[in-house]
Image 1 (cartoon, helix red, strand yellow):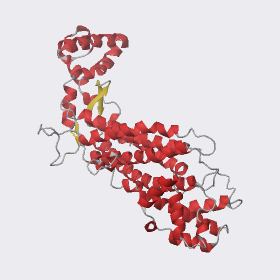
Image 2 (cartoon, one colour; image 1 turned 90 degrees about the vertical axis):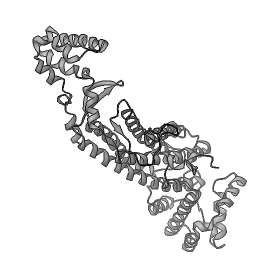
Image 3 (cartoon, helix red, strand yellow; image 1 turned 30 degrees about the vertical axis):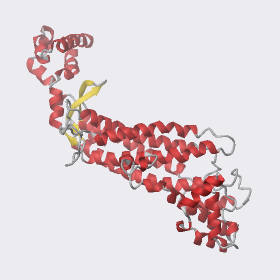
Image 4 (tube, rainbow, N blue to C red; image 1 turned 120 degrees about the vertical axis):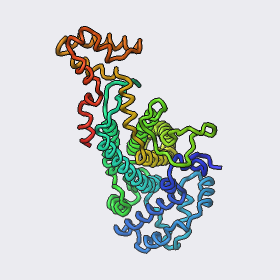
Length: 442
């Protein structure tokens, strides 16, 4: 039985994706370590640090088939060291004349961090793909519903009319900022490190910087200006981006849930034949995908603070906070992958009920109080207009009377506005401001 729900055969697909999980498998970790060691050996041979024959042998033997995961796990338990069993096994499969050049001048954290950067790049590629799909769909919703009127809500109450396209455009721009952040953080975060025990390259000496640059270029990673073993701001930035991106989509999912409530009925997540809302209430069409997004976002943001905890390291290396990264960063990636996948599905099939949006607005004519106040203000003064419409609004709210009738019956209002003008002012489609223009601006 799996210890974590992400690995569960029953529930794992609800929390992450079949694409993302293999990136954090044991085989993937070892494959990335092999790649780091091979690139290091090839770069050292290129710069005359180790014999070319040794680099060729290390490259030849650097195959995942040469490593048994159970055997490595037993070795880690026996040595209390994360990569010594891996290095010993790698040496064992190499020719005795060359095996001594494996891991030449490197330290454990060099290989683990460089390997992690390789795997994180694969994750970010998947997330970027799904973010692109999400922004395309949000852009489409903004354009398609630029003039679909619905109630803008503040503090959970009707405020003023907006359009659904405007709401989607607000979502779109928030997600697009996360895309921009991703493009900006890639060169800062996808950086390897091959600098030796305390980062001074003392073992390799003068060729060290050139070796590191060559090796990391082979791997497609950035080269650090200086060792970052104990400088974990890259981790904090990555954790922050994952949490912000996931919680933005969690917010959108929560809003879909709120607008799909029975009493509101303005949106609905995609429904497919066979989807079940309840084991006892056959009529239920629950927003289960959006609820799942929200759940994953809660878990995701709870881990973001660990990114800042691991920044507080001692001296040139500190295993305790560094080791914590091995647990929370993969989980954050996995949860974010699940959030983005579900968000793509929800937005691709989102049902928008414009007729229900309009009906909900018209059922609450008090939403148009500001429009009436604005028309009245030039004739009686802004303060008096506010006080007058406030009095009528509160009376209407308390008694359940018809707002239009109350306005037309008031002598001060009727002295300034005709009944036809009042009716026009109560049309929500006439008071959406620049909502449609903003929606189309995406």
